[in-house]
Image (tube, rainbow, N blue to C red; front, top):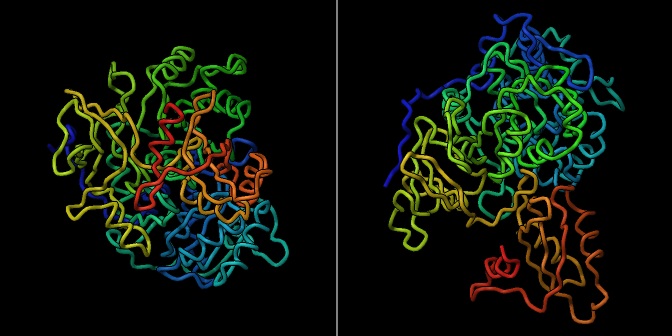
Length: 527
């Protein structure tokens, strides 16, 4: 059966994302829009409106053209949104890059996305420079922070003084790409997810009935803007509604707690590791967190007992969960704030204008019924346009009828609450970040003393999913140690992708087709 949302449909928002978010920015004037949570910089809505328009003019003057791709390579700063909306207004798509990416990883994304422009920050300039050299085709690297331009690289802020006219760009919101984040989907290597202006803007409208924001709300942006969760929940959504976003570059517990206290934060959008810290860390008791009104948790499964421990400690309503994926712009389910007593463990109810099926795990031609488990499939206006340059991968993800097969297993109760109970997909979620086993396996096989390898996610003592490698040594390589393997991988990938456990085995279980039988490895772990 097809499950429908109990909420009224919302009209599709066929607007460029900069207009959908900042369309009322100028009239909000001196209302604080973005506050640097580590310093003393505040940008008002009027400044955000003016600055992104001037920088759009500067980018166009520099040669950026509609259809170009700009790589935004930065931790959270108050200038990240300015750069994003400026590039959009100039007609470019923005591919967001993990600030911890190695030059090699960054170069792969540059080549795959055909990015011609890079915006980075001073501490990451060398990584960006090396990546640009490896990839080729980059027109210019611009620096986007308070530091002065250096070594011949221009500062994005310098464009504020341009006298060039604001670009008049024709954007087709239904077809043109606004954001190009990279996701591994259900398995495999990272792929560019083509999110149109319309898909992102419409998803913002779909989310409004669930978690209303507005002037006076203060949101703490600690999850990264480069990730679709942060881009939506911490940047686009609050700025669209006139809330104030307090920006932190990374999660440091004391800095995080101090920002809540100082700025009287009333809403948190977090991932499970932060819930764990709020529930258990003794430092929490040293800060005044009484301004908090609610917490939403997503990006990875949240244990029900942990959620209760956190909400009880902070004297808050039950933590709201949400569900989605990059390919869905990203939201499909949220637990509404007004729900008086949502069942423990639910990830919410369907957003407006969204349909869901649960495909039987034993018979793909049959749908699971209420209370029965099945693979979650989603259809709606928030579905991506496809994977950049990968029609086969797109067809494997989105069927002929427009259903996105998520690779997650769920069940729906009689009241329409969705519970995600398992994953059939192979993706590992390390603290909310996607880690593709196939990418790590391919890397391990380049080691001269590794004959075969498989990677799965296992859980550490804190309940965090981590990558574990099963490694077959080459003949005569009996002195290869777990430390050797861990250090080899760590030197070639971003820190969140590191192998954290290694087990040496005689063989990797495989099907006749050669596909790794990860289920057997998970059973060995008791997972």
